[in-house]
Image (cartoon, rainbow, N blue to C red; front, side):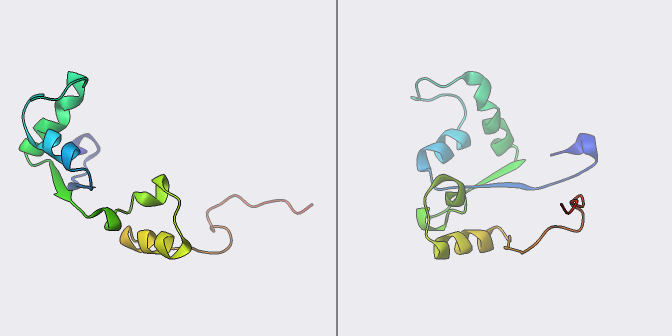
Length: 100
């Protein structure tokens, strides 16, 4: 939550990593080795409901657009999943360029 900014947002984390989801959903380290305990704050947020974890299939992970080489159709599919689109030209809010 971003209460200090007077913003209330629901955080939903979609993951295709079963291990990551299970670590975040339990309390403590369990049998995991080599993890900094200061990173376990997410377990508290998941247990209180501030963060929702959901499992998604590897073929539907929109983060692939930033982590893998994808064909154009796959890039467009990922863009649709996160409700983004391609546009032409410059934003009206962008600074004006001097013509040389």
